[in-house]
Image (cartoon, rainbow, N blue to C red; front, side, top):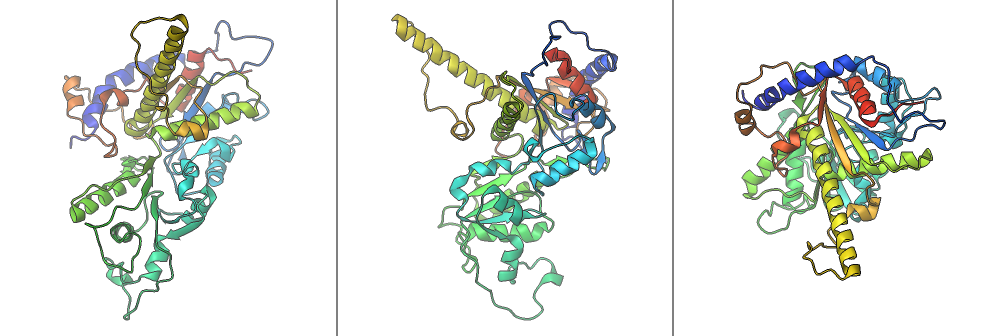
Amino acid sequence: MRGLLPFYRALNALCNRQVKRRAGFAGSQYGFSGTVSDSKPQPRFGLLFDIDGVLVRGKMPIPAAKKAFQKLVNSQGQFVVPVVFVTNAGNCMRQTKADQLSHILGVPITMDQVMMSHSPLRMFKKYHDKCVLVSGQGPVLDIAKNLGFQNVVSIDMLRESFPLLDMVDHNRRPKVPSSPIANLPTVEAVILFGEPIRWETNLQLIIDILLTNGNLSGAHQSQKLPQLPLLACNMDLMWMAEAQSPRFGHGTFLVCLENIYKKITGKEVKYRALMGKPSELTYHFAEYLLRGQAVERNWTQPITTLYAIGDNLMTDIYGANLYNRYLEERTRRKNSKAVAKMATATGSNAALPQVNDHVENAWESELAPPSATSCKSILVCTGVYNPHTEVPTDTNQCIKETVFHGHRDFRFDPGLVEPGHIVQDVADAVELIFEQEKFVPQ
């Protein structure tokens, strides 16, 4: 079994060095220059926390989590820095997740501090008045309607209306001959919230919808029709619960869907959007939430640095580093425009790079441009990432042999899965960030 273990092993030496260094820092008193003043310090950074493998394992809290959050709130229970919980989970409402976190961490969490993998769907208003099929588990109809979708159909509703389509489980087949109950509108788009309970049922009916252009009364027409819009949330191949090894995530379900579709049609299934980590859109939306917290607290300093704390190289670290590249490229383009404007004003004839004014991502018209200029990744050793493996002799060869566990539509880049810092747990991560920022909470 090769998988990601070679790459994890290659990182192990770095992990051991950084964890030992952090251990020497833990418990020390803050003593940084230039941070003490008569007024309360205003943070210029924000924190993005993954949940599974960082704060909890399944339903069990990780011991370091409470310790970390005791440092992040003041005596009035207010956060001293803006914090957003960025999870790829999509099986509940934001308020439900906020209540769970409040109970686990012992600090008050509001739903505006929680970002589910499906949260950016609020921006996809062009689909809000269309008939959409939703797949997942939990209160999927309520989730969809809360996001703005007005005409929603579930897999169970399809199955009830077309009882002859779900035939894998012999015990669920109709006992007597039945006819379709065609009382549902034609499906115009498909939204995948997360891994469902009965994979065979969801895979069958989603494929049917895609190959009939949303009308299950007809036969498959895979060669004639354009594919319906497909939007997917949560690309995690695996995630960490109470078990010793990672469990299947929604990314595994997507692998099944993609391969079945291709085997039947000979074509790749196409997504209109992929949401959740490591998508750049997810981090942009999370930064938008951080800025909202800063405004609410009357913090006037712009949030220029983001810290993303996670346990999964292929989602948390990859996503944070990918967004950092986006921020760096955005800064480069802004600087190029400034140079061009100055050259025009001064009459300079020097050759300048061509800048497209329409390059800015479409998200920015919806969320406003980011204020951050960097996004730094911090890997913890309490979840998917396992530092307790033997260090290989040739780390370069191991990176070349790594199996990419990311989504099909994201390419593997070793630079994107290299964390900025590796620490033992989330408490060490918070201490490291305060040290880096020379931040002393009052």
